[in-house]
Image (cartoon, rainbow, N blue to C red):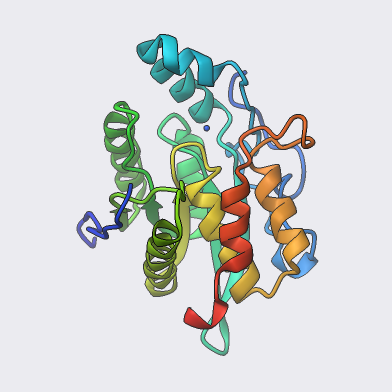
Length: 250
């Protein structure tokens, strides 16, 4: 078994009980049949946006940490697509939030879907992510996973052009890791919305040539977006990053 390792990639800067998946494919997936992947037993594709969390974060950080961890590990925001690797082979890429409380999901990903690499995009400011990472990597290794890669200092916030360019460099490094992984891949950040959404959107746009309106619709679905008045966790700067990413650099 390949040793577990930390990918030390750097950038200038640094979201109910688990539901059974009822649909044949994940709820938020791109509609084009060739990219749809059958849902995995135990892997919930629910995403819930709690509008009170931002205020709770300001007034009671400890309560916020506990609430957001409970939410993202209960409603794991699963999705998937496939990409071509070389001229003849394909690879499945799954996306989610932290899966440390979803042992059946991880077991089925490894044993039934040949997911042998997890790319954890989160190393942010929520303290309990360290314990969540340890729990997840332990479960994954127990199931037979080969590589657990933790990407350091990747942020989704873009206050200026320099930050956006730095994020683009990070995206290119992560996409390279996805392509090099020996089998299928699970990619996630904390809630599976922003960091994951940017990279997944760029993969859909640039590698799968999905029309940009469909790509943005998929991004929004994974953020619980309903309307401009109720945007959930959707961030306009994330959408801009997906739209403006130069595909020729991949």
